Length: 517
Image (cartoon, one colour):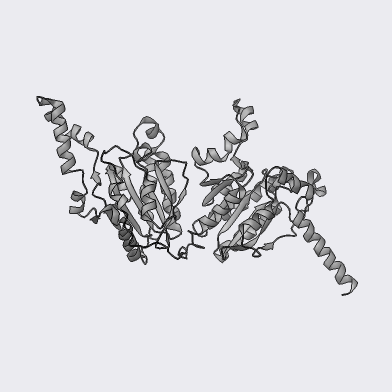
């Protein structure tokens, strides 16, 4: 090896060493002291060992404003590249907080958008690990424009490849919109998200609020609905990425992956025959139904703490991934409201985009009444559910477990909303409204004139229940395909999904529909 070659190789190795250190050992130590991992440590935890192929390692800004000429770091504030998760290819970027607080720069945008472009071209999921103090103010408008380049690609990739954002530190200001444009947001470790921070809020409104109370995982999981999953530790958050991807295809032209089933599709669950209480207003947990019907331990709930009157997630049937939509009778009696409508509609569209069949469990007394709901636009939000089901072209099967009243009967994937197969348990109650409301309208005069109005109302209610609040009238006219014994639900669903696996339906050609938003 001659001297020139050695000099060049030494120079390369030095640059690589610099890139691997990010903002330097002192800042790495500070990151660890805060209980946080570095960008490269996070990538190594997430990806299969030895699979990471980095690109853009040497990218460095050339700006001089506000002392930036003295703050040049090889690779800037993000690590980008490709790798594998459980043998499946992914694109990935991880913001590096040790470099200028992970601040978003023109160079960072160039690196991220290149990875996003290649992910879209290759048809592979794109994963972003966020840990950034926000825009690099020293770069001025350059930094703002840099965000815009990312947003455009988020939208171009939407519904084509899975996009997952993992928030592992601060995410504030304009930075929050890229995660918000992706399919799933996972908050883990010391993470928070907000548009305007506590200091700005205090100066403008006088309101005092902590970082965690404003934008912590608890807020976004339970109140705002911005986040879909959360974890205490960074490692657990990254493991959620692996689990989530196991239900999703690489892109919208592929089928979701199948795992080798360890559960018989013919399994009957006797417990389901008694899971619905005798009392029409008595609660039960729909998760118990889901756990009993689908492959053992396969259910992954999405947004478990938000709009808890609806349960959504993924599960497996005979090893095949499916999407789950369900009313939750033990919370608000499973009634639909603004937030649950949004939650359901979004999950339907994710499933439809990525070719996951949808199974819907119905136990819904209707839409939640009240001025708060009406003034908040429950009509518009409820219409999102109708739109999403009617737009979906994947296989769809519904199971009515108990109440299916009024507009909610339609909204929760009735035959008219393009359900391919509609089952009901014998406990199903399919009607325009509940017995009490119907009797008060239809038999008002008769009850009023009776010698004993209370007794007469009870008699009419009993007769109405017997005659109308059952699934057989709906089955008679073909609104229900079959009334099944609850314990049969698993094998019946498995057979229906198997038949529908090759379903092909296309919506009319158009630029795009106008979903109520």
